[in-house]
Image (cartoon, rainbow, N blue to C red):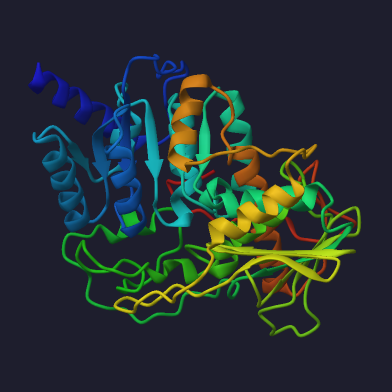
Length: 449
């Protein structure tokens, strides 16, 4: 039976290689039963996936059965980690993600590849009847975001975007304060993150042994191997810099911007909509200053500051990870913004904490709040709960897709130093602005969206 199974898997993998997205039209994975374990496949075994794997594998309601990476070192290390945890050798390790997609016994996939692969793998998984947890930003461009949002409902799947700030209390309370009018009428929001993407320009290095560089590049343009994109070994400590380059990521606008613009959207109640205009800075070379303008006149500006900073007619709300501040009528109601100690340093003595300050604001203004936002206490648990209930999770494809579109619109305004008029309902350029090419990219065959 084992030999037959492996022959079957090799056969479908071979057919998939010839036609990557000719998948069965029926839905393979039925909703997970209330007493069964969710079988999972993991794709992209880099530093981000290490943390995700640790969380998923430790749960009683999951079983990790397969991992995939184009790098031999990462692939072998991940398999060993899973096998060691379960004290067996049953985890299958693949070089090609399609082998996981084509397995009928896998219910859901977790995707933590570079951004330029997100949509292709996500769409293949959805069409194969699998639920998806995919890292942010959900897609590499606007066209892909639209395709993913449509595919989730068409295939009746559950998708969670890895924008886990929505499952952190300080961000939820900040957005509830804003939506309940505690700081008055909102005029604008400032979001702090780094530069837009830039063209790939690194020098060629000797290829990493065991890395399939052509498969790593996949739908992206051919670029010279450099360890900054795909670090050597399997235990590197820093996040790779592929995210800096527009060909494979979207700069910090799509990295930290996907987190903070997402919170701005949440606070403004724009989860299923978005801006109507994007205004670039006056200086064509500037890497800060771009504005997303909404139909009600509120704008979100890219700058340097406090993570996400809401400005109202009679107050301010500032929030970042483990940082929070509320000012009402000129008085500071709650504040915690101490820096985390560096490794080896002792934490500073403090009479309060972020948790305490958030609770103080909550108790003062939200005890009988009319607007209560989705309360997720754990991002992975929320995904798992929604796989069972078939309800949309806190960062569904609608949330993740529209937040990604905000990032991509901002980047295109920077890249082309252009004002963009946007229809957030039709998801299209308006008023003769924009260029259809900005919605998508050139895909390297056989990959396409």
